[in-house]
Image (cartoon, rainbow, N blue to C red; front, side, top):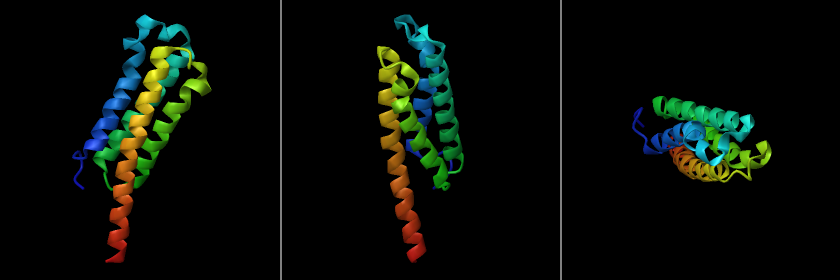
Length: 122
């Protein structure tokens, strides 16, 4: 796989950037009422974007794909853990982006695992 070429990583990068910037975009519906919400969204979004950039630059490192998957799971459970499940915009952003990231990143993990098994057999 060539660097900067995998579509799944671009999707997760955009998802991370959207999540990190969503407190600004969603501030009109009361998302910024609690500082923990803003910190959680910006932190998880930034970490997701960084993980995606590393994965884009080094596509053969499967650990970055697992890190991206883990960040998607953390993003999905964040509304309950941090306590913003009652804030519609923030909660739905976390849930939807979390699911998208997990599904997209697992397609890469499966493909990478299948490729590494074939390489070992030959």
